[in-house]
Image 1 (cartoon, rainbow, N blue to C red):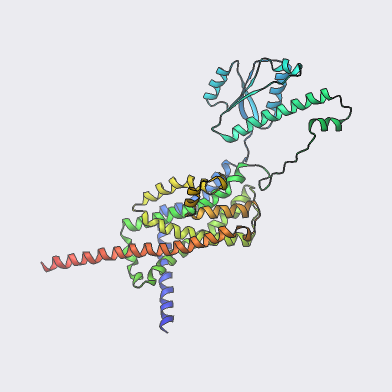
Image 2: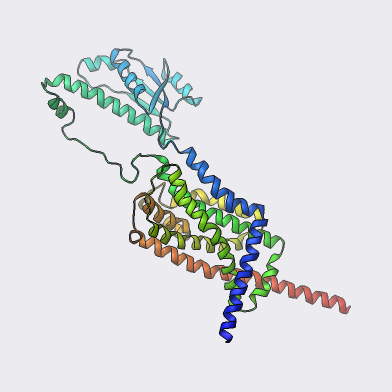
Length: 410
């Protein structure tokens, strides 16, 4: 009977903490922004920016020092490509450099004065390609276009010199070994399908940490941790506090997670191949790990503004060490170990494989187990954090009462 009463009282305490935390979330505008507005609006904005997937019509400057039919053909073919647009023609490299310095172009094609004559003498010629390396996508478009045009013009010259009589012979002369390129997991070769899945998972963690940190910062500023003292009469009370708050956060983010992982990719036609069981299996430990991680981080938040600085500082490094924007095999061992502290690392890796590659839960079993380990470890750490904070608040209250009693005796 006593055991049943303990369970009943524990459930009652958890429900009351859940109710109070839900009320605090609704009343706090800052928490609402990071819990509701940012997860809803930010993915749409980010996906809309990269909705074109690939870079097209990159402006370039052409310095045609040859001014022959061959050089004009090269320029014409480059301008006809979907990736490059010949926006300017310059008389010298210095003039082309000034155009690039103003940001009006991202690359320069320099055709030497002997371009046409060397081709007519059946000699090898060259085209100098200068690219702005600050934008890798523009560099890729400019360089690949120059390579494709050079290959096309070279193929035409080979055909003319070969003396073939059939189209099949011409094809074999130009390409004796046919290469078939198959783009796996990202058929459009688009930047959005490549980076957006990782960003969506990172948004879940970062907004959770922001919201929980803001709430904890407000409680600390207003000394509201004293309200939790009645719930911590016994050791199990700290578990009730963490569970009650976690249920509140989980209810909110279970809906937001479905929106981020299912609605946003479909809305922008990104690659989305997850099975329901695999997605649910990964998202459950990931959300729990992020919640308990956010509660743990909240112990370092003295004021509301501190958590914003912390999360903004960590967002880009966390995306890098996740293995999405940089190969996981090339990440230094030190930073790889540091990345294991964050749920986003395993969440991003598992979601990308499930969403973009059609992997099953058995294919991401290492990340799946790591997320459950993080959820369990951070749960106990979060309980310890609240135990420390509430114990500290209780001791301050006791010291204050003792001081008041001393003053009354005087």
